[in-house]
Each structure stands twice: as C-alpha cells, then as structure tokens.
Image (tube, rainbow, N blue to C red; front, side, top):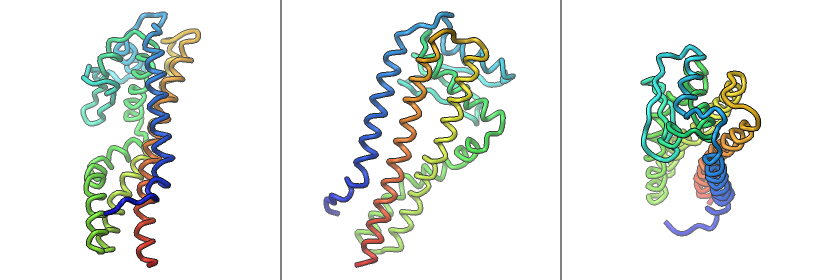
Length: 228
C-alpha cells in the first residue's frame, strides 16, 4: 500500500469534526463538573429517582471505573456510572446520569432503534475488525471481489453509527424532559445539562461522519480500480 492524498479528502472533514466534538465535550463536562446542583443530589441518586419514578425498579445503578464510561446494559438491566457521575453532585453528573437512564427507559418502552442497535453489536464488532483487513488484502492481491466483501462487512459499522444517532438523541430528549418534569433540577441548571448533552451528541455525529467517510473512501478506491 502507498500513501494516498485522496484519503485526507474523505477523512479530514470528519476528523476535524471529531476533534472539535471532543473539545466541546471536555469543555462542557469540565465546566459543569464544577457547578453543583441546588438540591445536592448525586448522579446515582438522580438515576435511581428517575428510574423509580418511571417504575423501573428492576434496573440497578452501579459504579464503574473509567472517565465518562457511563452506559446502560440492556442485557443485565444495569445502569453503570463512572465515579465522577455516580458520586458527583454536579450539573454534569445529573445530566449524564439522566441520559443513561433515558436508555433504560427506551429499553422498557421497546424503542425500536435501541433494539436494532443492540442486535447489531456482534456483527459490528466482527465487521469493524475484519472488514478493513479483508479490504486491504483484496486490494493487495488485486482480488476485487474479496475487497468488496471487506467493504460490505465494514458497511455495518457505518450503519451502526447511523442507527446510534436517534438512540442517543432520543435518550437526551427523555433525560431533559424528566429532569424538568420531576423537579430534579431548577433555575438555570438545565442550561448546563443542555450544554453537556448537546456536546456529547456531537461526538456521535462525528463518529457517524468518520465511518461514512471511510466507507466512501473504500468504495472510491474500488470503483477507481474497476474503471482503470
């Protein structure tokens, strides 16, 4: 393989968006991790309260390790929060905890995009690793059919990134509504939640853009070869 300047034509815009999104997240989380809620509740308490208010008493809230490692596991019905969120009494912690609770609510309501994303995980883990390897092998051996198999496998990664967008946007929407309707946050505290969750949403947009741009580059290489 050789260096191809065309790769940056496809990849650079998405890469710049990803860097911008990461900077926005770190800035928003950093800022609102220093702003304490007037009610003095932790992220764990916010999650537990909102889960119980929606009748989701079976969903556990646990602490997990890692920075911004917060996630909801639909298989074990566990909402896992990073130490900063689980113990934090800040606006950022409340917003992130509520967002993850939004995923639990999606699961309970049978939200179709979440079910589709969960079903795609095994195939995406397989395709995201093997797809590029098979694609490169096909190019090196000038075996176009093999390279297209790699493209098809990697296409699942791009589709997964697209399916993730409505899942994440909807979880944030539910979180914001519940934080207000249940009176968890008051005054201008929702401004901080909006800042944190909107920045986080941008990272998913960037991830989708990166996956799609890579897929388009693969297709460009193959269609270019077929035209030669």
